[in-house]
Image 1 (cartoon, helix red, strand yellow):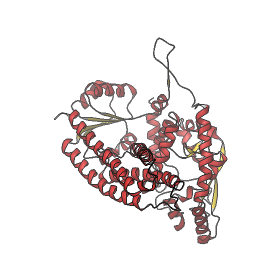
Image 2 (cartoon, one colour):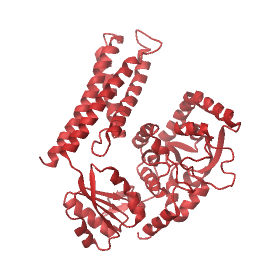
Image 3 (cartoon, helix red, strand yellow):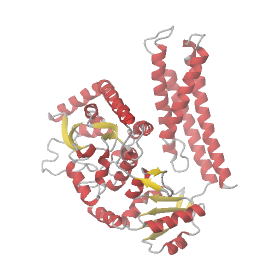
Image 4 (cartoon, helix red, strand yellow):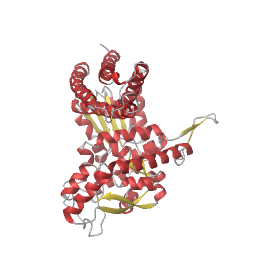
Length: 469
């Protein structure tokens, strides 16, 4: 069986799960909630609700990568699918609650038990499907014979995660610091997958062309220049291909909508989360008698400074030496209460006030401290480019990176967002943030002794790499 037929079978298995999930909801909704509708408009309302569920589920499964059978572990598949259904059912329940309370049979509270029961059934179904899908995939696709090409040790560390996917990629060769493109092509000949990081543009282009011609998947860790080029616009007035690059300039309609959403949602968020903020503030005060909130100077659009608001999770004298540093794993400056609120992200809630004031947006690059930003800028000269837009509560680097992700990689992800800003991208990142709230590794601190998220050795190696381009 050729690879195209194998992929078709896997896609069909994904489609089967998607259809059964929607049918399961449609049946459950008709049984448990359908009777509440007036017989006259039952059919119309029924299909409207099913359509809403379908659209939201398709959006959620894409946002949470619920069908990445090839690279996701079974546990992550189940988690992603369950999150997709949980978010979708939550939104549908909110719509049903508003709708039902205005019908012929008004009720004070819409019974959520049927939807909770549906989620339990779907969870069992997700488990069965995920295990069977991974088994089917492993039977049809063996691990690809893989070669890793890199410039220096910093580049090699960027590709270390490939070893976590031993069922998908079998690394049989590593090529360090290639100097001739033709020799490099001989090195990668015959392999089924190629990972590349740090090599110069000439060799990288040669590898890319070879892989496309021979139908070999090629995975490339980009440079900052590549990310900037992603936002370039093709100019059609010339007889040769010309791309125009310029400072990020979103359309005025988008900026108006984005600001309006920020104001409305931050107000709603402050109202809804006020009980949690009150409890958090009391817990912090009762623990050591210190202030519940702390203000810290951060940078937003065009380098403007503002004071970010957060619930205090560290001791009051955490930086008594006057040195700015990031939190480390098992940081003794973090209080017991602080560990809890950091794990639950409750320490971030006061930033809703910063969003309301206009210092921040819900989506954008995370605001950095001036002292730490200056350290980064001395080595990463492109670092200020992330300040083309307003700082955000969440962003691409927060969703797909970690607290201790290398600043160079975070910079690239921030620039990817800056070059692709849109209402859909913002909505996708907001929903994707819900997924990481329950993933502990996303809050891992830096190593002991580090003040920033990059060590001196890594910074030197990164600078050596950047000097090549």
